[in-house]
Amino acid sequence: MSNVVIMALTATLGTWFVTALGAAIVIFFKNTNQKLMNLMLGFAAGVMIAASFWSLLQPAIERAERYLRTPAWLVVSAGFVCGALFMWASDKAVTLARGRVAADGSSQQINRIIMLVLSITLHNIPEGLAVGVAFGALHFGGYTTEALMGAITIAVGIGLQNFPEGAAVSLPLRREGYSRRKSFLIGQASGMVEPVAGVLGAAMVVHIQTVLPFALSFAAGAMILVAVHELIPECRQNECDNPYFATMGIVAGFTLMMLLDVALG
Image 1 (cartoon, rainbow, N blue to C red):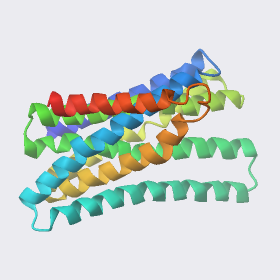
Image 2: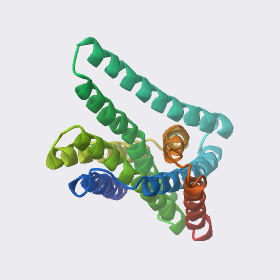
Image 3: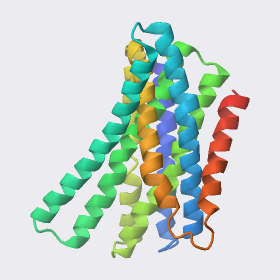
């Protein structure tokens, strides 16, 4: 049990580190190359969409059929919808926080900063859970190459999309007049919740085996919503000159994840 929790902690510390690397861009630049950011966001979206099926939904269906009396389709569908609803509720919480800040008469600058940090921090929670659940599943499925590769690729995919997220926090803060040091510290702090969520996800799965199919599909629902609602629209901004640039990033990310999780698994 402790092994998978340590592995989940290590993996999510890695995703946090990538967030910090993205935030560190602010030390060198006030702005970043938009085409590169679009490509990275598209690549991360492709990885997350592929991982949601091959590394989360497919194992969830197999384990539900093997261990549960409840129909597998019902458990997995419920988990998937709940994961998406969790992200939707996170967005609602951000909107509520924004309304309260405005009601308090705070400055527009503080309002933007709170929204920026809170929104990214909130959706880092299910991402950390996704990594934790993937590694926690190794406790029951064994440390096979396929299972381990699936968990690692989920962590890599989330880490890749954390890089532009770190930059997405630190760069606007710098433009608002914050120092490079403070912008970096706030940017990297947005990823601190992932190790906590990762450990909780792994521990939960280890102690309650029957919750594993639901937890895997929950993580898939959260990842799909993040990819479709946030990453894909974001990566397709400002692409008049290269309308397929970000799309090729999505295709490349999906293909790489498919190769890693299927061909090499």
